[in-house]
Image (cartoon, rainbow, N blue to C red; front, side, top):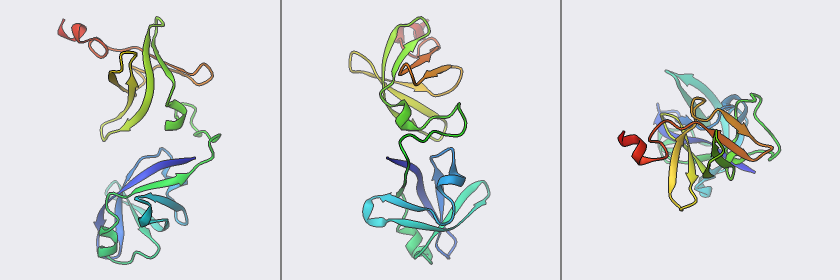
Length: 174
């Protein structure tokens, strides 16, 4: 199985380093020196990480064969994709891979069906569950403990405690 683990940002300096927007909770495992990653678009890869370091809170990577700013700039907005065993799970039991959550049923604490998770949107502020409702509309649910207190992979469901207005516009107007 392939998972997007990062997106390449701007070039940093003149020696081929790039900033990276990390999209994995395990960057030390997925984005370490020697890791070989597929890319989207595919013609830009595969890329092998030569070095990595943190500078001013951002991860900087340099890839083998990319030794100058021009080469680094050509990689901008490339997605980095790792091969992952589909049975692998994160070390922290409170963390989940996207593929574990997609297609789970979403219900409220009283058992009311909300819909099914279609994808996980990774935004700068927080992750969002994109849920397709029975009427084919979508609702975005912030993936935070206060709103998503329970994930039961065995039962294939996610239990939510939505604040007023998250699921019903009429509640928001009150």
